[in-house]
Length: 299
Length: 267
View 1 (cartoon, chains in turn green, cyan):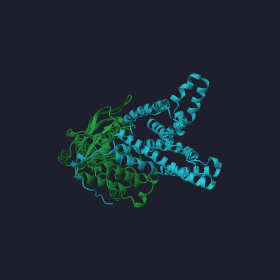
View 2 (cartoon, rainbow over the protein chains, first blue to last red; view 1 turned 90 degrees about the vertical axis):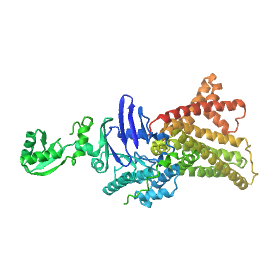
View 3 (cartoon, each protein chain N blue to C red; view 1 turned 90 degrees about the horizontal axis):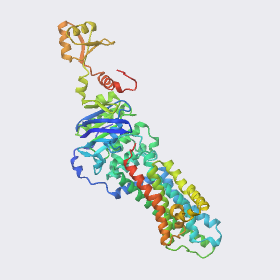
């Protein structure tokens, strides 16, 4: 379990991380979302002791990362796949990590196979790796010590579709075995598919956190009907404010059961009725972080 | 692509895991110094330059100069340049190549990692000098045989350790610059400034300001290093001078650099 408590990090007058608290629980994948520069990476660097917090703390099962005797065996970390000596081969980077953790060299071959790097690729220098190959190497390094916690910053970056699917299966499997996964991404679809819990950060502060279901339920209901105007009217009559979108869908904050019964009473046939999850995460993300978006209030 | 990973179950046992022993860190750091192309060639160049310098003495030196001391001096020159570079890169590549992100995540105690690097650096220094002395000895034997003169072993047993120490001082200067600057290019430029530009300035200062003449040996680390290379650091005062320049150029800046390194952010 990862516990972050009142974490603050200032740079001069600029507050990069502002009183952030959340937990990433075992057996679950926690998605860490936020626009560029929101403080995701800084928070993750503090977690693994690369950056000192101004105040507050981050612990792994109650222990500060820096106090772990051999952290590689407990926490797998991938912060930046490109942060490797370009002159080393992939295999050499894994060998160094395995030696540091005191693992047998056979583990290196296992990991190379696990992340689907070919033996020939593993002997090439990282300088010649594509971003996707560097990500795979980074994942291999993170998994090397067979940890029970994973902290991954944008791990899907640069992976091809098959690689993204593979990564998703890998992390889901890891969590289902009782592991804790914290991953950041701004690939919203990716997070939506894989995450059980969400933490949304904007301008250094948490703007929302909870299970994916809770957060997306707050996104309300989406309904379609052959006569959307009548549906909107009926809802208004029932005292439920709604908006009629350009694509003919009706959105409202009321729950689906309520919308359904209103439609039934008004004799309107619904063609679709569900919680507004489909577009949900993106809408939620944009509205929650609207004040902090570079592009202004995009939602 | 299969997503099978070994079990996460045996987790709680790890809390009792032993901390990473220093000897293991030293071994890893030694490996990291030579597992890149630049590191590899750096190591090769030590051997190559030793042999080249030896060959040059055999070919160009007059018969009377075919002595062990001359071989040692010829080999010593490239050594005194390459070894500090090795020391610099051992530290700075973690920042310039950003591999520190992994290094300091796997071993969060930065003081221990830097300590391991220091030990590894000095082991390389000692090993390289052993090679240099050996190549010089072979050259001396071969050179004197080729020239048809008696083999002259004109280096006393007290001189060799001083030459070794002189090279270790050079490496320590490089290491210190690496810790303080944490950037390869800046530290290498810095090394040439303090080893080539600075002595000239201090020399000049000693020429025009008489009061500095007496002070120079206490401040100019090149001065005390040259004394070591010549094997002429003999009196207590000369050792005190070496201590003084070491304190000024290595101990104090290294301490300050280490403090800032331990607090700094690794990005």
